[in-house]
Image (cartoon, rainbow, N blue to C red; front, side, top):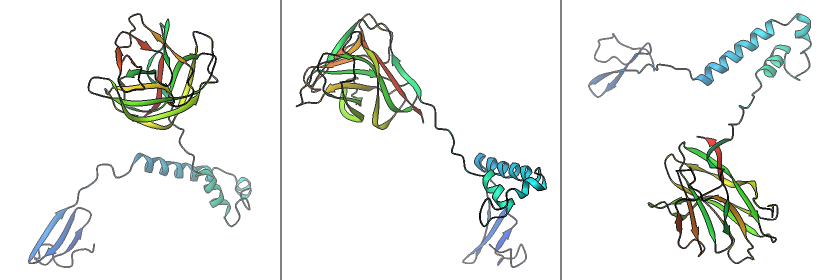
Length: 260
């Protein structure tokens, strides 16, 4: 906007004074507005970029004439200086966030729960930190035959029972799973991650795919007063239509993901 075109106190004055006041004409009224002054007009990213640029210039000036000349012709169409600067300021993507273990229980497994197409097993858990779940690890073994199974994360109802609301899932074949008890830990990466909120109860469910041949997968469990107090085992013998709570059992699981 232009500077005031009339004396400051004139009724017809419009324009700006520096960066603090703006005068506007509205009908017969002249309105003075005070511009907010940002506390920190530069973001951390902007400051970091400016520092990188300053460092690159300093690095160029630190080169000898012979070293500067070595940059000639390296970048077709660019001068040695601009070629050097482009190289120094090349974008480097930030490292990906570190995969983090959140909720888990992995001790005291002396028994197991069976999963197939009609026997569904679930372990509920309650995140203490909000995060994006990307995979789970479960301690499993199977009988002699293999089949297709599903692992999924669902919400729970007001009483903590698993629901049909699937947040993410993974279909897998049980063939790689050992047939030897007490089993081993296996990692299952979901097709899409899911956002989990703090202090909300979720369920990890494993079951065979209905309609297909389904031998057994055995999910290791601790039945001896386990110490994980943010969830427990739920069992369905009718393909998830209804669930039974096993308040004093916990299955072996690990919840892995990334911070929000």
